[in-house]
Length: 267
Image 1: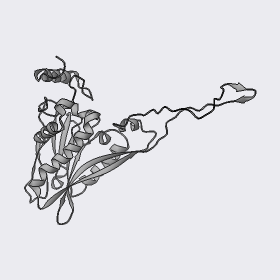
Image 2 (image 1 turned 30 degrees about the horizontal axis):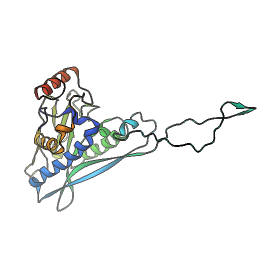
Image 3 (image 1 turned 90 degrees about the vertical axis):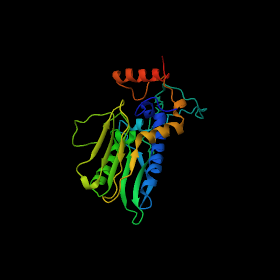
Image 4 (image 1 turned 30 degrees about the vertical axis):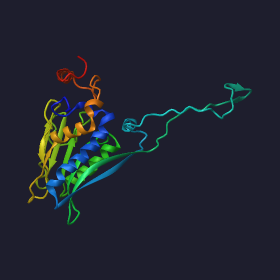
């Protein structure tokens, strides 16, 4: 059963589903483009690790998506210590505090490499919350992004998350829920931005390689539809609940109508 929404399904942005969707997108895009670019190129799935350690970063707790706080109850081995004062002796009891223990977040991305030289020709990034939130993760990603934009490597950046600040472009007047940036190295500083909203269909776009190559096509609607079906999201997602992040009032009314027409969600 396909997603009830014509484009991006906002329920896939929920932390319970996003990491899985992200990983499935990486594999599906690699599988889609590989037959179109072989044997000149290979597609490598690589990963980076974010280590969040800044105790002053107000976003640190929220970066630990899917890692709940765990309380372990056990029998205390400490003797009973009376409170208050005993003669001139004051007993000080401890207070439980939280220390900045580092947390590692793994994120995968794609690189299209020339078989003969192993040179990276195109980098494909699918953004996750760690990239978009303010803090160490965003800073780390922006440094890599700037390095790619200053090189001969093409960049494809896919943002299917409504929340948080979008990646910077010079024309900041463009507003959209989602976006795909296609930046061929030979056209910089110009790039193609596919800006689309919840009610729009997902874009189909060419993947830049070398100038002399025929560009393979990335059919994002078809790819996401396949992921939705293979993952069984049609019966795993509870459409009676509000999506996370929440929708605007206008989009909420529209989404409710869509779900009712598909006989999903509250009627």
